[in-house]
Picture 1 (cartoon, rainbow, N blue to C red):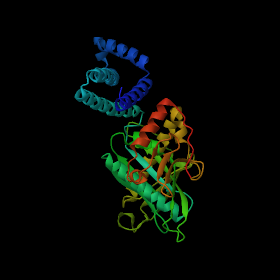
Picture 2 (picture 1 turned 180 degrees about the vertical axis):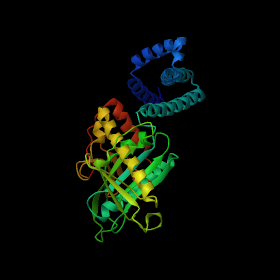
Picture 3 (picture 1 turned 120 degrees about the vertical axis):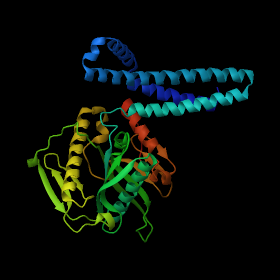
Picture 4 (picture 1 turned 90 degrees about the vertical axis):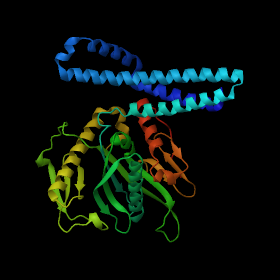
Length: 375
């Protein structure tokens, strides 16, 4: 088997293994048989809501199992075709079969990610907060670079991005910003970005051109719909109003319309200043608070994902999930999965999907990777 073909086969096998593990293959097959039997029972339709739930589950399982079998069958067929073509010296057939394997590998990777985005809130829109760490201008500039990176990532995926809250830096950059990202599976992808991000570069603000290390944190939580009831007691809230701040334009207001809400029992703080109406900003902030409380509950129920979603810790050494090194060499390294990129400009321009895919896969496999940070 040629190396190129084997590479695609290995990719397909890895994706299929993850899909089978995610589906709990034997259990999924038994469950599909059970659902097929229930669908054939005419009394099922006496309860329309239950029947719809059964049909949805059946369709999902049938689709996932069928896709997995189709990819596996295609892999086997093309591998056999390559062996036969090589034996007969038919280069054209070999080339066509290898191209088919590549297409199957791409499809397997896509199906794998779709399967991994099956969490309770994964399909939801998402809030994404960025906070500069200690270090003044350096960290505030890094926070602004991160905000552009996530906006570019969202644009690449066709998502819509709204600025909800913005606190300008003292000299440059931002102290914090909150975005609302709208699109299919926005939370499912973005949730893997929660944590501390570290930048190493020659500082543009240092006249001696020395290397600086800066930290900023990212916090991601889903937008919840009206079907999810989160109880918030007024007595647990501390509500402050203030004047919107920023460099100009939409960030400036002449009244105290911006709203900050502190949920005293949990210590969660949310803020909104995007609207000129204090009433609307308060409603937005309340929705954000409920979303944060919901995300906290999800963390309790999803122990497998708990490591990535611990409560905020110090934004500094020992807590980072990813390092971005711009000097003296070029490297971005994820410290959870070991995924790297030697093109940090591309990453900072929104090329985050490989990092997100690896982090999603890790949640299913539970595999821990021993990764050393970069200098």
